[in-house]
Length: 101
Image (cartoon, rainbow, N blue to C red; front, top):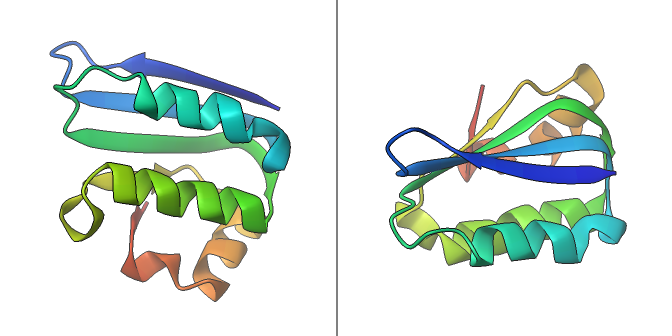
């Protein structure tokens, strides 16, 4: 599992890319990325294009990111989910908390 991040050109958004299994083993890496992001970051995009699986700890990490980003006022998109990942997010009602594209 790999987590990488890339801010956009104007530094207002960061894209966090998940590769492989998104589970507890990535907890520290994922948290460090958003906690060490520039204070100008206003939006987060989680790119799941290469994510193969996510578990309940990954759902918890997404919720922690949401809290860090401002809770109900946060701007977080989860994109490029495969069918299995999208199903887990749907069953967990994450569509009410995040924009899932």
